[in-house]
Structures are given as structure tokens and as C-alpha cells.
Amino acid sequence: MGETAKIDISGKTIELPVLKGTVGPDVVDIRKLYAESDAFTYDPGFTSTASCESKITFIDGDKGILLHRGYPIGQLAEQSSFLEVCYLLLHGELPTAAQFTEFEHNITYHTMLHDQFDRFFQGFRRDAHPMAIMTGAVGALSAFYHDSTNVEDPEQRMISAHRMIAKMPTIAARAFKYFRGQPFVHPRNELSYAENFLKMSFSVPAEDWKANPVLTSAMDRIFILHADHEQNASTSTVRSAGSSGANPFACIAAGIACLWGPAHGGANEEALNMLIEIGTVDRIPEYVQGVKDRRYRLMGFGHRVYKNYDPRATVMQKTCHEVLDEVGDSDDPLLKVAMELEKIALNDPYFIERKLYPNVDFYSGITLRALGFPAEMFTVLFAVARTVGWIAQWKEMIEDPAQKISRPRQLYTGATQRDYVAVNKRG
Image 1 (cartoon, helix red, strand yellow):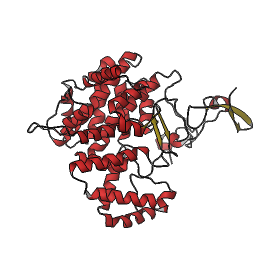
Image 2 (cartoon, helix red, strand yellow; image 1 turned 45 degrees about the horizontal axis):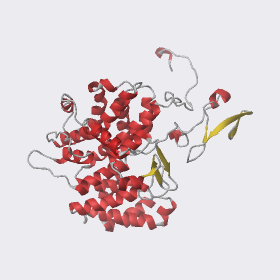
Image 3 (cartoon, rainbow, N blue to C red; image 1 turned 60 degrees about the horizontal axis):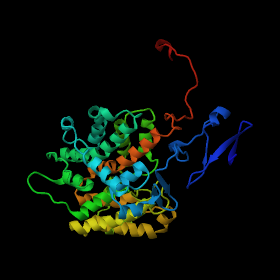
Image 4 (tube, one colour; image 1 turned 90 degrees about the vertical axis):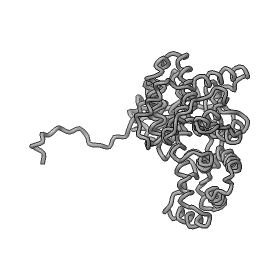
């Protein structure tokens, strides 16, 4: 028998198995706790609870480590491509040349949307937030592609995975174009994933559009850095929705809705707004003091999981400089504010003691702005990238024989049972 943990409840000793992963903390298996003790555990936000077994992504927040299927995020961002990372997350291994060619072809030839789908966008007001459009549009995919909604069929699961990875940039670009009042641009099969997205977002009929390799590479890297992040709020939402047997399009729409929250996917927009609020370098000391006095919030620093430097931020910082140099905005006052704020945060004892290191959102907001995207599109881009992570996690959940429908319990503190009193007899 393996290692166990003992817990005493009301004079009764309960023995619970201790499970060990390949890396990371041990896990106390409490599945039989309620049956044997008539007690639940209490863990708001599930911050100390493993909700599933997974082989996809590992994070060590104390050491600043992020691995996808064992590969460090830095290596993937510098040496791989987003579609190769998609294959890795979905299948568990990096593809051979032949496997990648087939996968790239499958994604490329699924980028088109059903012709009737374009009419769907007309139902939104022109000033609708792109994330509102994304949530509705992705949920509606199941009405157009009902031939791949049977979650029990492995082939349909893979087709729906390919469809969503392929069509998400098309939907996102259409949400952007609709928001801008510009005509939709169709995908081109000869372009790469990132090139296609940038062309669909920024090309207009009045002039020719040419891909910029620096900006294309930056976009691809941004997608890689946001591809998956273990059991975060939106991923847990996708798994929870999927545990009921809901179709994959509905599950991803649920994830997008969760991602929209400012504490999750909206963090890079909040970080950019903070830099705009500070405005100039000379205002930084005043703002930093305000943070210490709890008058201001420091956005883009610190992380729920990482207690060290966010490994994605290292790559994002480099990407940020490359993009700004390319577009001629290296003198952007917001970048100067960001650099000075980073320097202070990395040297000030107040921030060091609290481990408030810059995270990926700190740099990505500036980078996306330099690429030409308004703040309203930041979370949309996050959703495009995270789709593969959601799909991989959803697929793993469906194929896990131990998975049950998500059903958290509660600590009830409301009224105990009481009798109904007619309205004319209530005091």
C-alpha cells in the first residue's frame, strides 16, 4: 500500500491515499472522504484542489517554470511555431515533418466559415464589444457544424478541434472588422496561420497588403505564449461545461465568456490602461507611492500562480522591443513608462518582498497596441491563442475514464428548515 494521509473527524480516523505526479506537489485523494466521514473539504476558488489528472501543462510558480508536454515555454516560443505547439498540445508529442504537413493542411483548409455565418454578425450593434461578438459567434458554430458535435466519436472530436483552431482567427478578424465598420476579408490558403490573421484583420480593398515578417513572427509568438496555462478559470470552465456532455463549440463559448473577466483575460488591457494613467516617467514615483499606500493597483505585476518571474514575460519583453523597433515606436512614451516601472519593481524592497514581478500581460498590451489592435481586441486575441489549450484540455477530459460531471459542494450557512407562512399572516 502506498503513502496515506490521516485525518481525524469527530473521533474517527480516516485514511486517504496520497497520489504522486511525475513532478509537482503530492495530492491527497479525498474522493471517499464524504462517504467515510460525512464531511466535505472547504476550498474557495479551488486553489488547493486538483480537479483532474492532466498530462498537458505543468507550472511551478515558485521557480517560474511553464512546460507544455514537458517542453519549456521559452524553447517553444523561440524555436517552434504556433501550429506545431497546437499539434503538441493535442497529441502529446511534436510532429514529424509528414505529420505537421498533414496537420497544417487540415487547419488551413478549415479556416473558411459557412457563407450564411457572415449574416450572424449583422445582428450585433456596430459598437458591440468584440468579445460579446466572439461569445455569441462561437456558441453559434454548433448550429452550422452539427456534423462534429458528437463528443462520443473520436473522429468528430478531432474534426471539431481542427475546425475551432482554424476558424477562431477568422471569427476574431470578422469581429474586429465589424467593430471597425470595414468589409470582411477572407482567409488565403497560401498564408501562414499568423499571416492569415493579420491580413484578415488589417487589409482593406483600397490597397495591397504585404506581410511583415517581424510582425508575423511576433503574432505567432504571442499565440504560443497564451496557448495553454494549466487549470485556470477559463480552462476549468471549459472542462466543467464539457463534463455534462455539452458540445465542444458550447464549451469553448463558455471559456470565452469566462476569459472576458478583467481578472483573467482582460489583465493586459488593464495593464495598458495603468500605463496610460501614469502617462509619463516623472509621474512614476507618485504612482508607486500610491500603490504602497493602497491608493492605486499595480496591474501587470505578480501572478496568482507565479511567485517568481513569469517565464512568458521574458519572451514577451523581447518581442515587445522587436515590434516597437519595427513599427518605429521605440520612443513610445508608454514603453518608457513600462521600462522604468519594471526597473523600480525589480529593485524596490516593497515589490521584491511581495514578489510582484512583471507578468506576460505587462508587455503584451503594449505589443498588441503597436501591432495596431485597440484595447477591445486584446482579450479576443487571447481567446484565439487559448482555443487550442481549451480544446486539448476538453479532449483529455472527455477521454479520461475517471472524469465525472462537475459538481462542487458547499458550506451552507443559510436558514435551516422552516415552514411557509401565508402573506396575510406575516408580521
